[in-house]
Length: 102
Length: 166
Image (tube, rainbow over all chains, first blue to last red; front, top):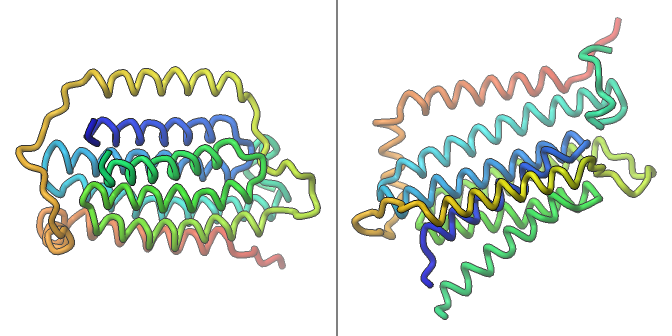
């Protein structure tokens, strides 16, 4: 069976599921952010696969680039927040962080 | 089997294996380094899809930027002397069941849907066309993206700096 659209969509679905599992179970804030990155990568594979196999244009790739750009912004802000939480609470376990201020 | 098919399955296996490591590893440092395999594997998948520019961007931003940022954060917040289990996970079984059911449904619907097919599948350089699209049809989102990045930059600096206590 030749490699077609289905293979790429299944790959994206697997990445999405693994990312969702990370987000659901992890208690470490950085590990949750890693799960979000996996989800974004799975979504990007879908965008590029559809643009290659279904529409034939480049619009899907443009969207993928925008998602990558927003992922970079999200990682910078998210990790800065994690570092700020670590400075205040001396842990990044999301179960232990219960207040918004010191 | 063709060489390309074997190569695809190899890259997909690396991607999924590393992603599983990210999701299941008990050590946060192993998780962080496994992200490298996932990001590089996804870049390879983009090459298979004829998206050369996106593959390059993936390597530059994910592998070169986000991964290094994640590693920095892990090293800065990780106490080496602490216990081995740095990447605690709770509620594994219910989450596994729920995610498994979701994945099953997703794969089922992917296989049953009659997806639209393009008239022809082209493998051509994309960079010049992407540049044209960014400066024509997608000019407003492109400019907004620069504003978002500037705001994110300032926000990250503002949040992570040390408060001056008087």
